Length: 326
Image 1 (cartoon, helix red, strand yellow):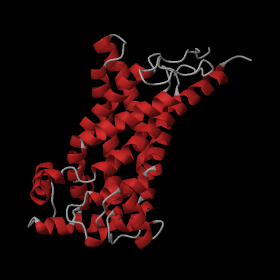
Image 2 (cartoon, helix red, strand yellow; image 1 turned 90 degrees about the vertical axis):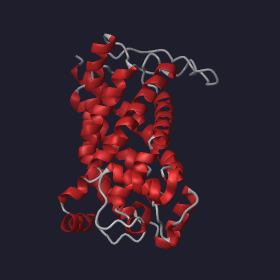
Image 3 (spheres, one colour; image 1 turned 180 degrees about the horizontal axis):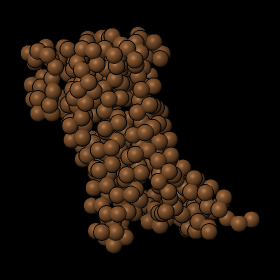
């Protein structure tokens, strides 16, 4: 059994078509569950680690009442200032807990997405591509992903904040558990879902739409996966920034912001977070860090999709070659 060879995809107006010499093999349609999970885990880890310093900047830029020493005008300026004043490795603090969460979270995420997409497409569109099926599948995959990633997000964002009292991941986990209880690790879960369900719906619909335009034969074409992933990430990130600001506030329980809003104890609930953000920053407050979020998300989703599609293609092809008679 061989994977079929395909011709280059038609190009969008304004884009150069692939040269006649560039020929890509078709993506596998019947990849196994283990293939999806392995490809997803590798893609998730690379997605979160490669752009992690920008994610650290985004967390700080979303602060509603930042310390005067932690006020930044641009992503580049923020990174330069953090490294200069806090040390070269400071933008990477918390990356280890992100790796531990991203692997299993994305393994389940992509496996669930592929399974649900095929099942729903058969029902809605009789096997054809359905944007509705893509959106629903992405939303359902998010439930599994966020259940694993939410505790990691809480620890990661607390370690990213300026003047964070935590030096190690274990120290942060123990302190949060001791002072706020186990529920603190899922305080932002409903907000995270409220953000990520529309984010992933927009993300997957945009990605699949772009693939239809620039790679209609659904061949393994790295350029199309990178471009589609970057555009999908940018659109989804910009649209859901207000929810991300609320999630960051719930995760970090920013002391200066809560004090300014006359909130004692811990802030919980999406509605309360929305009110607090508006009270402290007005409408512009909902878009704090939007530049950093888009800059982070574009290459992140481009990396995730290109790595995922590569490993899915490579692992399936490897399995088929092992089965082929010599």
